[in-house]
Amino acid sequence: MLRKADSSFGFAIGAALLFFFIGGTLTTIVPPLVDKTWSKPFENNDPSKGPTGKLKPYTEIELKGRAVYVREGCWYCHTQQTRTLLADTKRSGWKGVDSPISTPDEFVYDTPHMFGTKRTGPDLSRVGGKYDSQWHRTHFRNPRDLVPGSIMPPFPWIAENPEELRALTAYIQTLGRSKNWRPDNDYEK
Image (cartoon, rainbow, N blue to C red; front, side, top):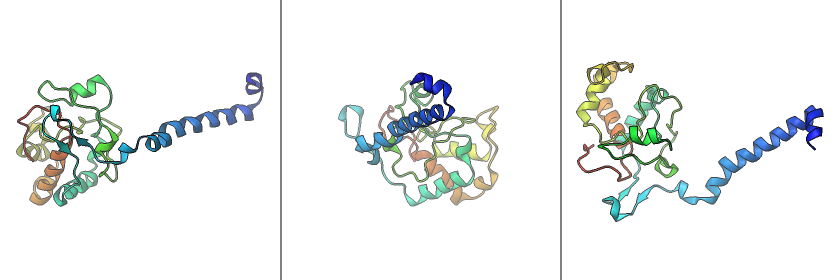
């Protein structure tokens, strides 16, 4: 059979496509069929990890903020997923506590998903509550005021529109807050 692949171009292409489709099926179609929790919102019912947390649908103002996030293309530079890499869990962590990796049940209310693929800016999957709302408002007005050397452009048209600024800040403050993984005293929405 291997000799046939060496001498027959069509057989080699067919075998490669067959293996590609088998791999694609096993990694994209089978997991959600086997594990039904992926389509249900995350629930933290473990009392040893602090108060019970539950993923909630976005409020009206958070949906408006998410629309601003999409419109301005924030997701082109910022991801919203903590990968399984140790560096990601450390970087997204807070006050010495590593953040949990992102799981599908955290994103059931996100349409479209904003995972992002390029990390020009920092990952935002666990940023909600790390900074107060005033910090975010200042950051959108001019990022270099708070993060010297930042390559993020200023967004004065958002900063000058109180409704959009409040909505965007409300959306950013929701990111990563459904799981109770951080020590107390994070900033309120």
